[in-house]
Structure formats: structure tokens, C-alpha cells
Image (cartoon, rainbow, N blue to C red; front, top):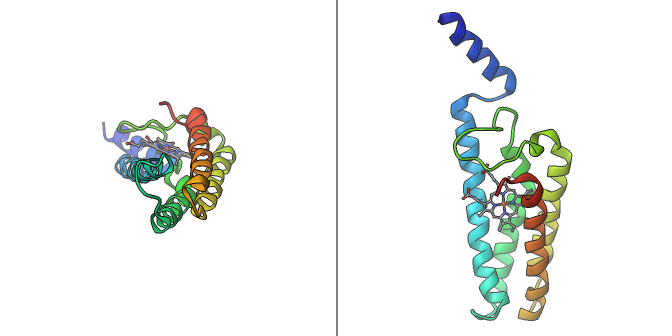
Length: 143
Ligand code: HEC
């Protein structure tokens, strides 16, 4: 029994993080995405003219999404492939370069979006931002 426990601990160490740390990583990356989703709802309402165009809001939301996109791959160390209710697909861990590239595309789209000067601008840049979400989710997220 003791040998089994030690073996399990060694296995966890060799893959990177402990089971508890893995759950923490998963929660952090899901919270970051929930925040991004909330920003997108605000931006979408503005792009569709449901709320008044507000350049300050657009700038702030754009920066916030860009920062999250820039660091997003850091939320996926080895050992966090499974656990909790993660929707991360194995492709993230098999193809980290591809994953980093779609994260960079999100960053670039958010930085382009935050320069929008009018609702017309925002309609276009918001659409491109949405494409960047899909490009990653379709390959790297199970839902
Ligand atoms: C670089 C890849 C990538 C990009 C780009 C990306 N996402 Fe995600 N997103 C993920 C992954 C991976 C998950 C699943 C994380 C998990 O469950 O461990 C996820 C999960 C989510 C979730 C569910 C969070 C939860 O668990 O409640 C939302 C909402 C979301 N993304 C919104 C967005 C929006 C909106 C955009 C675009 C502005 C976006 N994402 C762009 C990779 C990405």
C-alpha cells in the first residue's frame, strides 16, 4: 500500500503538478475564460447597437482580453490534462505550438478591436475577435 502511494506521488511529480495544483490551474483558466466571455457580451451589445458605443469600455476590454490571451498557454502545464470539469482537449498538450499560435491570434484580434473608434469599426473588429475564439475552441476545447 505504501509503495503504491509513493509510486502515485512520483508519477504526479514526473508529469508536472499535483492533483490539487491541477484543479487550481483548471479553475484559473476557466475563470479567465468566463471573464473573457463577460467582456464579449458587453462588446457584442455595443457592436449590435443595443448599447451606446463607448470607446473607453472598448479599450479597457480589449486590453484585458489581450493580456489574458498573452498568458493563456501558461495555464496548461503537464499534469493538467484532466481533472474537474475541464473541457481542454489533448490537442493542447500534443500541439503546444499550435495552441500558442491561436492564443496569439486572439491577442492580436483584441488589440485590433480595442482601437475601434466607432460602432461601425467595432462591428468588424468584434466579428474578427469572435472568429479568434472559434479558431481555438474548434480545435482545442471539447465544447
Ligand atoms: C487559445 C485558445 C482559446 C481562445 C483563443 C479562446 N478560448 Fe475560450 N477556452 C479555451 C479552452 C481550452 C477552454 C476550456 C478550459 C478548461 O475547461 O480547462 C475555454 C473555455 C471557454 C469558456 C468556458 C469557461 C468555463 O469553464 O466556464 C468560455 C465562456 C470561453 N472559453 C470563451 C471564450 C471567448 C469569448 C473567446 C474569444 C474572445 C475565447 N474563449 C477564446 C481556449 C480558448
